[in-house]
Each structure stands twice: as structure tokens, then as C-alpha cells.
Image (cartoon, rainbow, N blue to C red; front, side, top):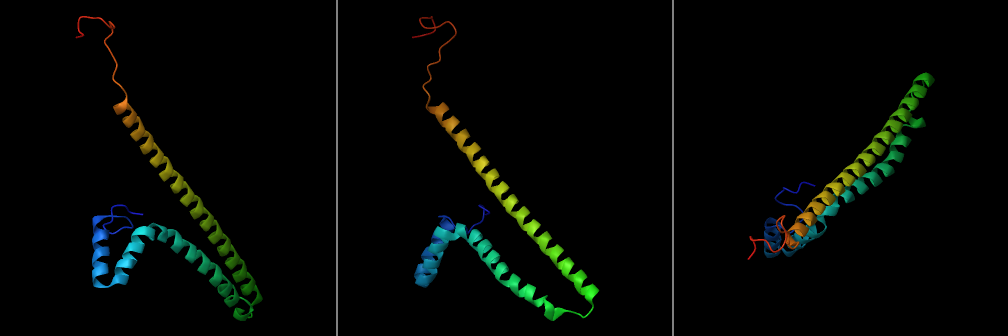
Length: 146
């Protein structure tokens, strides 16, 4: 999700202002904006799941429409068309698998980036809070100390 967008599912000044205005104008609008702020980041996964479910439902309809009722009477052509449709369905399955693998890869890449940023933060934080007890090479009791 693009984190630079003005209206995104997060507690930003713009979304808070829209929520308040929504409550002032018509309370369901404010409630809808509040729901978007809280649960909006789950919309992408929800849309993906709905699309997969509807694809599964309508796949049966497509297969039925390509079935015996759509025969042309030319057996050779019908056999060729059936094989091509099966080949295309297999290609679609491969593309869907590749998409899922890529989504997993991107999720892992984002997790690794987040981990690297967190580790860098902790290293900087530990370096800033560590006691500075370093002394010169000559050790304690030298002329440079007070």
C-alpha cells in the first residue's frame, strides 16, 4: 500500500479531519471513515479473497458454457478447442501460483527490510545510551586528566 497517499488507513490529520467532518455532516459517514482508518489496511486481502471466491464460483459457469451445448458439430475443431481451453486453464493456474510466490517474496522482502531498519535503530540506540568510559592510550593517572 502506498504510504505517501493523503488518505490512507492510518491516523493522519487528513483522515481524522474527514472523520470529524463526516460525524458532523451525517454520522454514518464519520463511522465509515472510522472503520476505514481502523480496518482499511485489510481491504487488499479482502478484495483478493473475494475475487478468488467469485472466480471459483463463475469458473463452473464458464465450463458449463463451453460444454456440450457449445459444440459446433465439427469433432476435430471441438477437440482442438477443448485442448486449447485446458492448456489455457493450466497456464492460468501457473500464473496464479507465480503470483502467490511473488506475493510471498515481497512480503518476506518487506519483513527483512523492516528487520534491518529495526536492527539499525537498536544499534544506534544502544550506542547512544552506552556509557562513555573510554580513556586515552596511556591509561588512568595521566597528566591530561583532572
